Amino acid sequence: MAAAQGWWTAALAQWPGNAAVCCAVANARVQAGFVDDAIAAYRKALILSPGLSSANNNLGVALRWKGQLAESLRCFESALADTVQSAKRANLLVNIGNVLQELGHLKAAQQSLRAALSLEPDHPLAHSDLLFCLLHSDDLEPGQLFSYHSEFGERFASTNSGLTPPRFSTGPCPLPRVAFVSADLRQHAVAMLLEPMWQAFVANRADPVHVYHTHQIEDQVSDRFKRHCVWRNVSKLSDAQLAQQIKDDRIDILIDLSGHTAANRLQVFAQKPAPVQMSWLGYPYTTGLRTIDYYIADRFLVPPASEARFVEKIIRLPAAAAFKAPDGGPAVNSLPALDAGRFTFGSFSRGAKITDSTLRQWARALQVTAGSRLVVGGLTSQESLNRVSEALTTQGIESHRIQFLARLPLHSYLKTHHMIDLLLDSVPYGAGSTSLFAAWMGVPTLTNAGTDAHSRQTAAIMLHLGLGDFVLDAPADQDDRLQAITSAPQRLNQIRQSLRDTVNGSVVCNPPRLAEALESALVLAWQRQTCGLPAASFDVGEAAA
Image (cartoon, rainbow, N blue to C red):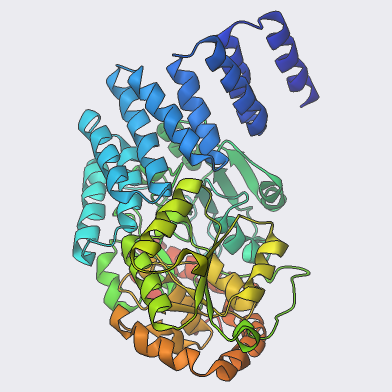
C-alpha cells in the first residue's frame, strides 16, 4: 500500500496539470479503498477539464458511496449533458435513477431507468435496478410486481432453459461444495445477518466454503470473512469468466446474496454454472430466474400464501437470518412516555423506503396520538430530510413535532432508542436489521403484515419474538392498535423491560442452530439433485430444533 501511495504522489507531481492522470490516480485510489482521496483527485481533474464526463461519472459514484447524494446527482447529470454515445448515456441514466431512488423520488427514478432501457434494452443492471426500485413502490399490486420479475427471468434465462448443469460431487457425500456470491460481505446489513452464523457454518466442512466477492471495496468485515473461506474478489471478472471460475472450483451449490441489488451477478446464475443454485438474504423477493432453484426464508417471511410469487422453491429455516447482540451496548431504559407524558415514535428506515404511503401512515399516527412526536434517524441527505418534513407538515403535523437525527456510530445509534417508545415501519418495503436492533433495545415496531417477503420483514421479526399484537392485518387497523398501545404505557414498559431477554433467547439469536439448519437444508437439496429429483419446497425448522 505504501508503494501505491508513492506511485500516486509521483504521478501527480510529474503531471500536475493532466486531467487524465488525475482520473487514473483517482481510479487507483478507489480500488485501494481510499475513497476520500479519490474524490479529491476527481475534483482536481474536473478543475483541469470541466467537461470530462468520465471524471464526473466516477466522482458521482464515489460521492454516492459516501452518501453525498445531491452532489452525486449533479455529477451524473453533468456527465450526461456531455455524453453522446448510447451505451454510456444508458449507464449514466442508471446512475441517475439509483440516486433518485435513494432520495425517495421513486417515480423519477423509474423514468430514468426506463430511459436507460430504451437506449439499451438488454442492459441487465438497468433491469435489476428498476426491479429493486419497483420493490419500493406503493402503487403496484403483488401480481404486477411478480410479473415484472418473471419478465426479467424470461429475458435473461430463456437461452439457458435447456442447459444441463455439471455435477461435480458424486456418491453419498453429505456435504456438497458450497459458494456464496455477494457484493456485501463488508460493512453492510447482509454481512451483519450472515456473520453471526458464519464460523459455525464453515467449521466442520471437509471442503472450504468459497466466496466470490463482487464489489471492489473490501474492509475489516471482509477480513473477518476471509479467515474462514476461500475468498476471491471477482469484481473485475466478466460474467463468463466468473461462471468458468465457479466451474473450475467445482462448486455444487451456489448461493446468491444480492438478488437485484447493487453489483449483483445474476447474469452468472442465468448461465447455471453450478448444479444447485439458491438466493438468500440480500433481496426479499423472487429473482425471477428459473435457473435459481431455491429461495431461503422462514415460515413468517414467506408463508404458503406468498410462495406462488416466487419462481424459486422455498427452503424454510427456523429463522431466515441470524442476529448477534452488540458487545457493550447501552442498557434498556424505562419507557420514555412514562416521564415525558407523551409518546415518541421513531424510524431508522433509509430514504427510499419512506414512500408516500409510509408518510401518510406516520402522519395519521401523529394525528391520533395527542402530543406525540416523531424521531427520524439515518437519512443521508438534506433533500431526504426536506421531503419528509414537507410531506408531514402538508398533512398538518407541526414541524416542532418532528426531530431528525444524523447517521451515528453503532453505540450512539443504539442509545437513541432511549428517547423512542415505538418504531413505525415503512410501507411497502419494511425494515429489517433496524427492527432487530430496536427490539434488542426494548422497542417494538408497529408494522403491516404485508403479502410478500419485502413487506413482511418486520412482521416476521415481531412474530418470531411473540409480538403479534404489533403486526397490523391492514393499515386501517392502525388507529385502534395505537389506541390500545398508547393507552397502556405500563404494559408497553413491561414489554420493553423483557424484550432484550426475549431477543437473546429467540431462534433469531441462535446462530449455531441456524447454521445447523442451513447445513441440513443444503444436504437435503443436494440429495434431491443427486437422486435426479426436481427442486421442491421444504421446511428444516423442526429437523434442526
